[in-house]
Length: 319
Image 1 (cartoon, helix red, strand yellow):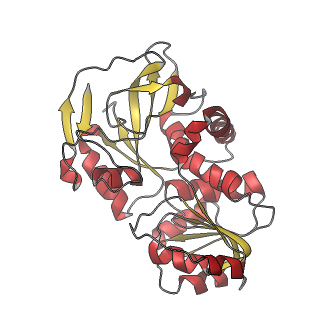
Image 2: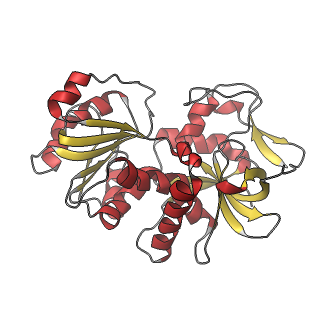
């Protein structure tokens, strides 16, 4: 099989195209011939060994794929956590979900990590109520574009505010359905968020950056407001004082999708079926930001880190 393998941690240059022996599934596992693999911010942290958990070398990165089950011929998406940058993966059957007719492999894959993260932030983490204001940082990215699209149909959210780093990405966030899109830079962010919400504090914030963006967003929360951390793209950790939470009745919530594997039927399959149904009805549209051949995995990660793209980035194993 073809795969991207790294034998050391470091920059994009450590991602090397190699030929490896074909895989053999163990009992309870399924062999999937990969058509497209997802490129995620977490992959860039894994490449540097700075992700939530530490990895061992040699390593095939990639947390998710779409493809065809070798045993049944069924199209599926799969959460593999590692090994996705390859023409084959073996995955526990409980980590698979069938792709419905009328939905492309690319669209289904964009709904897996990004769609499920947005779904759980809205429903499981914050329980957004009808009319509440929702701030989506990186509103043109993979998770952000899904959260912007889902906020109203899934929860009845009120004012949806997106942030993005460029005029083009802010325009994209508006096209995804945000009511207003503002500059996401940390300097002056608290004041811009409040102004964007008609001079009121906001109810919910989804943060993928950490660092100063998190600090400034936390201070824009209304009483009983919630901020969800689903990424730390700045690699800057934050410390929150309990006195601040107490005085302001604010909540800080963390979310990592792979904890949903503890209850895959309830936390993965059911929400994913809901997302697939909404997509096939045209209620949401997964945004594909670009696809690269497997040999260009490094270029795909560079583009992701440069924030020059919108939506979901993919590796196409068919090219």
